[in-house]
Length: 182
Image (cartoon, rainbow, N blue to C red; front, side):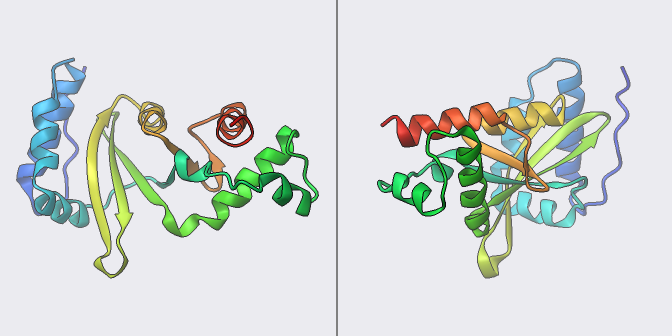
């Protein structure tokens, strides 16, 4: 197992070193809890570091599932107005997709990149004129594990308009549980 570190371009070598140390520990099945506490502990320092980095690959848009499935009381009327059937799984998926699209300005993103085949995940929230705010750096064995951790934290992850954290069946079940089976 290689422990090679990918060089970072940030001005803050302390955080770079902590991340590299955490990756090595993670690969050796050792606890990374203290590393993550130190990395995420100083919010200002972490945000300066994160802003300085070119956090690669792609942004994943997140939306708390609770927000997606805030179903208005008159849901059946809304479905009827659009000529959709509340009992049709296909129409439920159409409704979810349109609702998510309408709420896009409230999303956070989850950024990931790799160091020596280990996935580093960072959440980013745009805070108006204050710009991006980074938080919750975590280390995962793969991007799929990162997406699962986000789904477990009540997020739905999107890439290019496609849900990558849940199946269509999961989404339909969540909708029915929160909307039509109350």
